[in-house]
Each structure stands twice: as structure tokens, then as C-alpha cells.
Image 1 (spheres, rainbow, N blue to C red):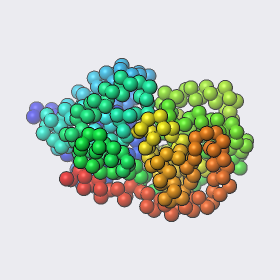
Image 2 (cartoon, helix red, strand yellow; image 1 turned 120 degrees about the vertical axis):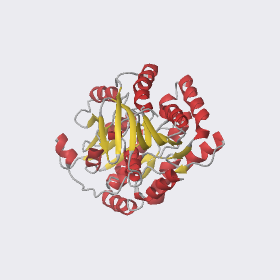
Image 3 (spheres, one colour; image 1 turned 180 degrees about the horizontal axis):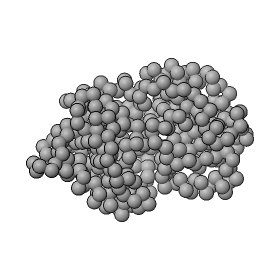
Image 4 (tube, rainbow, N blue to C red; image 1 turned 90 degrees about the vertical axis):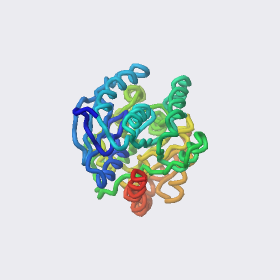
Length: 372
């Protein structure tokens, strides 16, 4: 080992920004209780270095306007020099895109390798119409996954990966939020100068294909004027969504505000009335999606309306915290109206469910997984 390499207990590799990612924040928070020195090398829009709990975060700047092959080439060129300067006892790939780098480093340093399979990367929604790219990431995942200790966000995903790659059943680490004392406020009403009786629908997540973005706008156009829609997140459809809001003359009722850092996000969530997660089954990954926004809505007493897809519907039905709906406009509108007329009841059910659906219930599983 050369004198200029940095040594850590563990190193995470991530194609994203920790400041906007609840799952990675939660993982690092839990592991900081056991490990004194953690590192994260990430690709984002900033070239900076900061501390998060016991984790040194090294950011590699990549132009956010880049897309496709150019984006990934730039990301790897920026990320690899920072990553190879770190020697760790374990490496954790936080997505399939970082898996080749984490696998290379684990072999070079004879370290453990973990893989956080956040979705079914062999069937990514964003690549549903890009078969060649989808095949590439599928082949890379297949090549490296047998070397990893794999964990997922849902039992259905774990079962599919076990069957597809003939690996041990991955452990499920659910995307639950940490337990916070969340105060419900009128923050969104004040921020956007909405009338006090406005019922605020909120969507938080990527602004991309298959997220139901335009289905939300279709439903809003059919709802009474007292309903407004706030969308928080970045992605390839953000600017198109803003143009569509203008085209439909919904600018006084629909707001695409862009991404919000996670430490501010729940302030928005807790001032909305209904949370939306209208994911479309454009890929196997999306069909089985169990996004953290669903649990954040419950935490904030913002009853959710989700697609009637298996994993989300199972949570809705088990805890009775909201409504799982078909994705035609009439069904979405009917569900919103029904839930809006029973908000007090559903908020009470959210209060009961959030005692169970918290990250604290996952912490011991995380510690056990990384200590194995």
C-alpha cells in the first residue's frame, strides 16, 4: 500500500448524491454506530468533500446535462481516481452502475463486497425502450453478482434475483424512513400562497418515465379547483413537465419545484394532504417497486394513493393507510376524492402504521449483514 492511500473500515460507491438519498443516509447512520471510519465516493453535480456522521464523502463532479454513454464515461473517469485512493475492509456498490468499480476495488484489496440492489437492474424502467443498454447492465450484473453479498428493498426482488442468478436469497432491507417527530404544518400553502382550503397532493421522486407524472396532471385537470399538485424531484421529464403545466393552464394549481435535499424534504411532505406514488408497470422493476416515498408519506401522516401493483398494494392493504388504484384517470380521480373525504381517519391509520414502518426495525438486519 502506498503512503498516500486513505484507509477506512468501509467504502460506498454511488452514482448519486447522498444529500438527496434517504436510503444511503440511513445505511451510513446505522453503520456509523459500529465503524469508526467510513467513506463514500459519489458522482454528483458538485466536486466537494464533506462529512456525514462518521463517513467522509468524496464527490466527483459530472455535468448534469450529460446523458447516455457520455454521462457514464464522464462519471467513470471522474469516479475511479477518487475510488482507487481508498483502501477499505469492505466496499458496497449502491447501484449496478457502481458495481464494476466496487468489485474491482474489492478484488484489489481482498475486501468484502456488498451490493445494494435497489431495483431489478436487469429490467430498469428508464431503459425499457433501450434494449442494448439494458442488456449491457444485465450482463455486468450477472458477471459480478456471485461475488457479492446482495441485499434488496423488497422480498419479491430478493426472490427474483435468487432465481435468476442462482445466488443465496438476498436479505431484504426495507426502504423505511428513520423515526422522526414530524410536525404537520401549512408550509406548502404559505410557500405557494395557496388558499387555506386547498387540498395539496404531493409527489416526491424522480421525474422520469413510468413515474405517472402525466397521469397526475390528467387527474388534476379533472379534480375541483380546491386541489393542487406539488412535484418534488429532478430528472429528464422535469422541464417537459413544467412546459406541460403551462400548456394545460394549470400553473396556479400544479408546481414542479425540482429536487429538495433530504434534510428538508419531509417539511414539504408533512404539509401536504395526500401522497402520490402512481408508478407504471413499464418494466419488471417498476412492477415490483416498493419506493421509500410510500413510507415517508405514512411517517408524515400524508395518506398515500399508489398504483395497484403487488408490493405497494400489499402494504396499503396490510396497514390500511391509503388506497391502491388502477391507473386510468377516472380511477385516480375517484381515489383522490374518496381519500380526501376521510383524511382524519387515514391520518390516524398512518400514525399507527408508522410505529412499525421505520428504519429502526431494519437497523439490526443491517448490522448483522455487514458483520457477517
